[in-house]
Figure: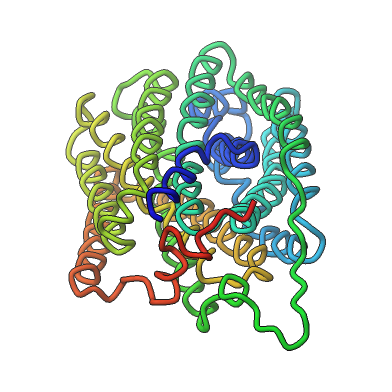
Amino acid sequence: MESLAEARESPIWRDQRAVALLLAASLTTMANATISPALPGIERLFTDDPNAALLTRLLVPAPSLSVALFAPLAGFAADRIGRRMMLLAGVVLFVIAGCGGLFLPDLRSIFASRLVLGIAVALIMTAQTALIGDYFTGDDRNALTGLQISARNFGGLVFISLAGWAATLSPRLPFAIYGLAAVFLPLMWLAIVEPPRIATAPGVLPASDDNGHPSWRSLLAALVLLQGLTNMIFFLMPTQISFFLEASGYESAAMTGTVLGLLMIAGGCSALLYRRVRRAIGSAGIFAAGYAAMALGFLLLSRSASMPSLFAAALLIGTGYALVSPSFVAMALDLAPRRSRGMAGGILTASISIGQFCSPLASTPLIAAQGYGALFGGTAWLLAIMALAAFLAWSGRSFRPRSWIARRALPGTSSARHNG
């Protein structure tokens, strides 16, 4: 039975719906970090603005503020209106708002366009997360949550590499890269279909996949808090690394593109192994390994700005983040009932964005007071504590999936079958 399930699961990436959802996932990295290599150039371009330093740093996480505000509303709408049109409308708005920086006259108007971009991302991410839960179950779902992190990272690699090159020509040119999202629309239009609504007959108990975990709200709240903190830490890289490199004497645009490119390569490759790693060591083991790798990466940044240390740090941070990220989505979709997946996806999306937006607000004053070494060193210690807590939970087996989740995740059971 398991061999048959594995034979069925292996070509999941050939499913057009999966491909369309992975393309949508790649846009989320493009939304924030694509313009990172251009930040110093943008700051110089608008040097007459007295708030140029702060506004420039907020351009990267600005979409996250809108996502944090609108994603829960988008989740509410997705559960009641539908997912397909929300996804398609989000991509169209993404292209329009993302390209705004090409021609808008000042930092404030560019900042406003980034806020609109965040609304598009909220629509895309919320609809995409709900559709993963609707279309796939069990190991198929675990595989796709790992693949979506790979899509984000490999997409980010392409987009940020292009941005690094474009920023050497003009600080405005990286905004044109957002127009590439229009190429994805035809496949999304054809492949994404609206999932059927739940209609339970009177007197018939809903399936476990429709019912969710009895305490799913409190467990989801814990996941949301942890994911927000994780993303606040990780977002130190796209928001601060270009300024750190410039302060360390490197040519910022090209070097930032290289470091963030390595971050994406490491994340994309490690996320491909997510399903296997989760099967081997469970969710708590993944959190322990992922946070430990991130801690070591930030420790290297705090100790040295040499090129080998920078590259090693990027590889470690990218690997660690890509290990823990899929678990948030997979566990949330396992916990939430089907009727509330849009809301769960919206809240989960909002937590990512809140963490991203808070990252420069928390880190910039610390850098001004203590320097980059203190920021990266303190971050390393925090991650080490998180890794230790996850390791203790893993060694005590307290994070093992509940029996109802384990039964649903077993290959060959009725709940692990493809919903397509």
